[in-house]
Image 1: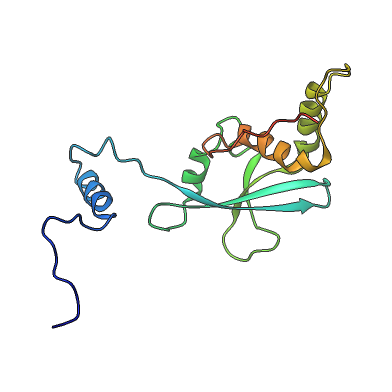
Image 2 (image 1 turned 90 degrees about the vertical axis):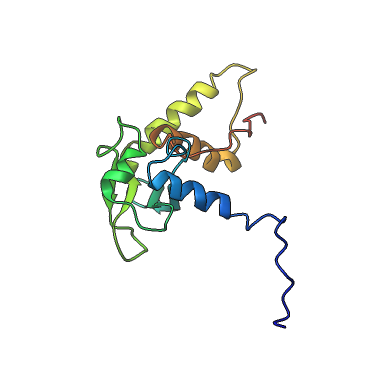
Amino acid sequence: DNGLLPQDPSSLGPATAGLEAAAAEAARGGSNASEFVRVRSYTVSITYDKYYMVPRMWLFGYDEDGTPLRPAQVFEDMSSDHAKKTVTLDPHPHLAGPSHASVHPCRHAIAIKRIIDMMEDGSETSKHMRPDQALFLFLKFISSVIPTVEYDFTMDFDT
């Protein structure tokens, strides 16, 4: 023989078989078309902008098949208040290739300072942000610009 175990007809197929069948049905416009959710993925990098002296987030998107997203598709995932205004397509400072979506850093410091001031209202009982929480606060700020990205907000700012 070939050394393989015989296929048991009562066993389940590969785990991806159900997903592949649902995708094929959705592509044909079948009954599962409205139930099948297409997912986009983003490669995220954060650099430090020396001019504005703040972090800067860069995103490069892919569809489920690994094909890079077109600019219009990227802007679909951004807040309409920020798309093509504070979120722009720019060349990445350290990666060659196509432009990346970037949240322009010109207003980062003002927005983050406003969030910190709201948290630290000056009273004895107000919460204070520790320096190690700065990146978390930055990501919380970015979530208002890119609402389609899922974030974990379980961290609190108690000292």
